[in-house]
Image (tube, rainbow, N blue to C red; front, top):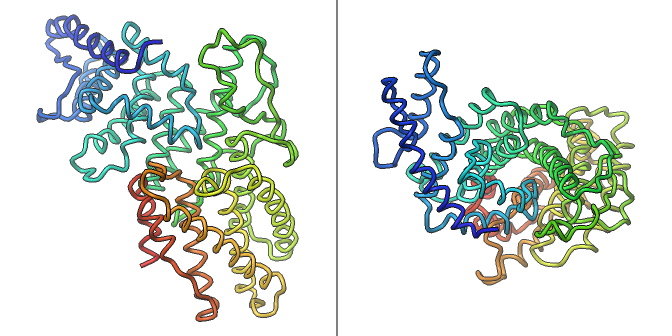
Length: 473
């Protein structure tokens, strides 16, 4: 496989070459077909795209727009704007986003990226643009930064492909990364719509159905594994988006995973050289007991299932059945958390992915039980409420201690991009502390400085951190 910079240079050379032929053809039709817009021009890529599509709609007899070539040239322009950093962007994505949301398998993606030089494909180019968007989304001065314009462009390119092409896995992956960007940039309303669109496409492609087949051929297994990972990613991000939305809480857009749905395997099983693979790795189903060791992404999916159950309690609170449901969920959460924390290293890593989601679920669960007691006017007498006060205090302090450990690290030791679930968990701990202070007054004292410092660092990657920082004051 060629290095990334050679692949991108091949794309650049091919894009420049193939502009000539369609340009001459379109000039004979009195239509402009310059698919490449530069930042120095008065027309942005988004405006140019709209112009070309309008021309095609207004004149159905005109030759059809070469959408694959158009999208590849969009990627070419992005590569020009980030020529010195595009390779680093891809490396950053697979180093810092992929570990906790591994929905794009690196080897197949890089192979499809390499083919763009002789086989232009709109879906692959869009996915590459979405990766760039996620990695560079936290940069300052978004109004003048190319990555901010890239967001509008990715949204429009994704919408056009949904209208013009049959659903594809790369189209769903692009939408999933756009939803991730919107969540991290504190646009949960837009993220809710984007993840709903991903779920709709996923259902059309039957990504939610695990056929249970065992594939002797490695490539067939790899394709099936990526489909399962993408659906699991939609499932995970749907619950995360639900949690960070502060206004209307729409229902989950993806149903709960079936007990027999096979969980993702460890990335170590994804061999770079597929010729070395002799058989497909074995999977564990969603219903596997908590004592069975699993890879971290699989633990994330199990953790988000628990978070989803807690969220359902927020939507449909049956006062009579709530104590029993809370007790059952509390027991399962404690059992899961104990096993999970045994498997993961100490330090900041304990607030990444599965650990952060589990802690968030526990914080929300006990807030639900306390708020129910307040609503029923039994807060001062309820044993369940007293138990939840103690549990909530313990979980808040746990998150605070983890933040303290992270803040004490030197700059080279800190991870460059905080995982989004960690930002959510830190923010939920802040909100839980504020709620405790409202209920107990001076009886509850909490030092918010560790949370604030962690969120200040996290907002370099995710604007969502500002949403919680505003509450800290």
